[in-house]
Image (tube, rainbow, N blue to C red; front, side):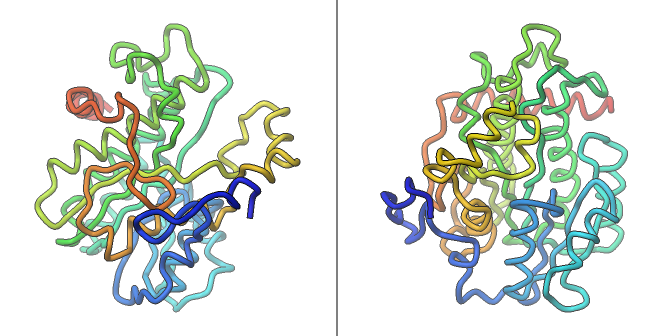
Length: 308
């Protein structure tokens, strides 16, 4: 446990900062349920897959290639059908559409989609398909995937978007709808924050569009040392591995807890359109609760997707 965690107490859900993914699923039998996770090959995604399979679920794990997904599952326990690898490169619309087509063709009923994958704080503006790469990967790719699979979502199915408290670091406009190719004043953290704000707003807007019984929420996992931080400056990476990290960082099992809780726990079933942290609902930033911005982002995204 981190020193920061010593001072944290469970919230209204009965869980909190120190809870792990195993803690929040203790006593749950997920046999017969199917979960789709992006970014299954490391960090939070791998831990999420492990715990869901441990509780009896079938896990469809998406990674950039089938080989990456399959390799990550090799060490996990579970039955023969417990882990199903899927290729889904979120920055390539064709790959996402192929993944959707594969799952639709299999007529799968999905109990929850956990949009876990992402990239963070690219040091230089990188553009692909006319879009800044973090926005393309973290938001556009997941928008394509989730909306393409809504017909496969169970009647009580859930969508869980991995956002971040970094959504508070987005540009002052929130989402630069007129500059999604990062042509002006690129900021690594401003663009990352923008993509995480987009994840949050996507869940908020999707919640309004889903039929009764289904839900969409966003989560902040906490600050965790995972592969997501590979583009961080060396001094920050070093700090996370020293005493500073011991004071503040969550472990990977703790970091996976909130998304697993929101995706599986009966107590979270009726909450939708919310932003969660430490396994409890939390207030987002003002931009994160801006319904007009959420609607504008949805409309802009649909227009962009149509051209990709």
